[in-house]
Length: 411
Image (tube, rainbow, N blue to C red; front, side):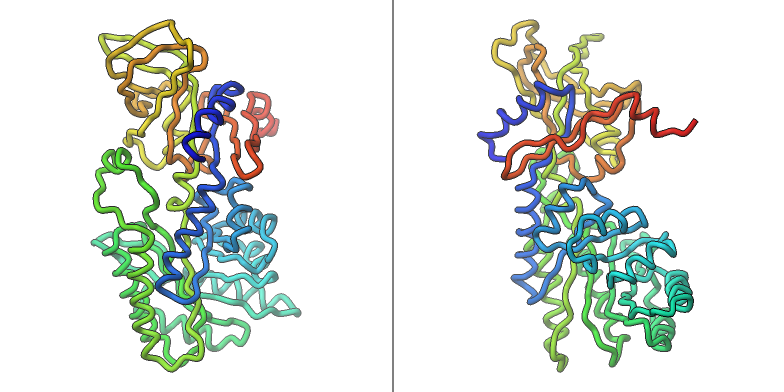
């Protein structure tokens, strides 16, 4: 959303709701295009698998697929979601440690890719094939396990054991090994250099086998404004181009030495880096509280709604003052607090003269990552969600009610 549109859009939403999320669909699409372009500048064929777990709001997923993104999913629920949203049902990358028989069967039938986490994944696939007379060729890749910065990962296959997996796959004519996958929960350029070292190491073990798929996962930094970067205590944030350069250069150097008719496709799996700054959260000011010279704006926001994976982050918060507001004046700093009964539900601070009225509200940016998917009906039902796109503003989830929450239980 352009700055000149923000005020009008925010005002329209807050006139209807106590609080709400707003998706900026155009920003989300711009992020995807920018990320892929940065990698294409360094490698000839690049595909994005959008991380459903980060934010699986339907309009977000459909917007990604409109740009040609695949669905990167990690559960049977997300497989079913992807099969609803995708036009080309084969564009599924199935990760995760809890793949069910039924979900594996669905991915096999549509021709998706299954990233093998351990032998139990292969055993399930083999059992499905053995019990099905109409056998499909199953596209599989091996997820690599590695420890970085003395922090072990619980996912994937130890590279020292890769040969055992390769030999087992070689023995089954219905298993088509297409390549390798790696993902680590680190965003630094150094950690991506380490990922590429792991990829090159396993490619040297791969040998004569065909190769069509290299997946370096996600975990990129996206757009982080200066105030948020300061609150997160991070400096020298890598750009999309920095990631693309280190990944592309390593792969180009390696494959240029081989006599390959075609280089493998490069896949990346972004989530937070493309969706975090594409969502806002708005909340009216419920009350101004002055307690022991400590001034607070009580809102309809909550830390559990906005940042369930970070319990200490202070958000950059914009305070919007309505015209004609004249009830109270505050010239000192105010803490912005949530509506819950949790003492630590403090979201940040605003440094502004504040005048309270019915339509004064706060706006918090960068809330698109893991907020909605990990949200809950704690104390208040979950808020509305609006989508702003080329066709305008549209509500895509109404504020939940007590009746809706109760109806989710079975008497």
